[in-house]
Length: 423
Ligand code: ATP
Ligand code: MG
Image 1 (tube, rainbow, N blue to C red):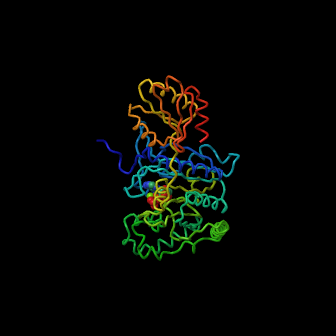
Image 2: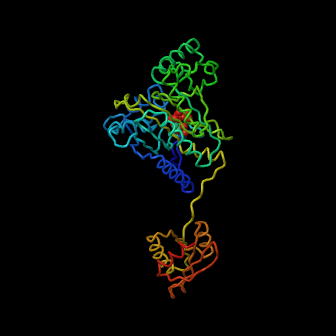
Image 3: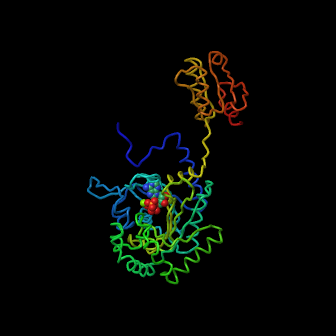
């Protein structure tokens, strides 16, 4: 038997309502903040991610689904959303759009070849936003407030927002040197990845999952001490404006994020719900001031975040929050013989085109079994059609909640609809 690929999942009909509920909520919140949806291809040139995400990241080094197409071009299923959005921004010259900053969101499957773990899939759905074209602490705060709004809107309470500033390019150069000096003498005690990182991107040693408990990580130099005045002022303003909005946060000096292009504000949202499991990050994001130029674009700056719906669902489960189940159908038609079934087939057809959701029995079950079926389908009303009803052209329309019945004419679709909509 052919099985589903490892690290992927089927979202079954009984569960899709949860996804639809979340997706609708995300679309509507995005609209509140005036972000418009952008849809980019499922695959892109591999080069986009190698340059845009960075050659020293786990994503590029280990996790990409890369293949050659029939024209011998290297393509990659997108592992993240920011580089494709920025590629599209540059290609469509969005810096000239009348609406500035350009505020977009996406919701799409992402692909990473990762070790299977709770909350970690090889295909997962990310919702993310990007605000490009403005460098101002207030837009950083807008992004953070939208992030918190999303999670709080589902009733989640055990949320911890971690923020940090990783400064501008100048601050980072000095900091990176301090880290090299700090780690170099003992780098042989670190994992093989970190032994490479010290030369390619020393800040990411702080982000290492294997070495996070090493004493030298714990007492590493703190980036804040290396921020220049501009970077410090920017960070202070972000924090003051978060305070003004009563958004609680914790400054986490070890938060550096995995991607190379971040500058200034970096953040992660964690769940501290009991039973959430080993992975507690719900969402990550930050400001990227070098990315557009790195991809041969204009010198615009941006900020964004990305979350996965899979981990949002885990957080809801950990906090015991149930999403509302969809309502059942409006009407179920039970039939007593073959000619009643034929008539019912015509009736459901007409009602459906009039916007009434209805169903009927196709398995020639006994009336009792059909009533059970109606109940399973959450039918708000039922009609039983047999010989008598066919002869008179009338039937009883029963309201399943109240138990009351009303006589209706089987030809009068408008009347049936009116009664059903009254409930
Ligand atoms: P992690 O440290 O968990 O590997 P990351 O730094 O790789 O996360 P990002 O690239 O920042 O994650 O992705 C943003 C968000 O997407 C994460 O916070 C998480 O919610 C989600 N995410 C990342 N990888 C996966 C995955 N394999 N399966 C499900 N969700 C994921
Ligand atoms: Mg990862």
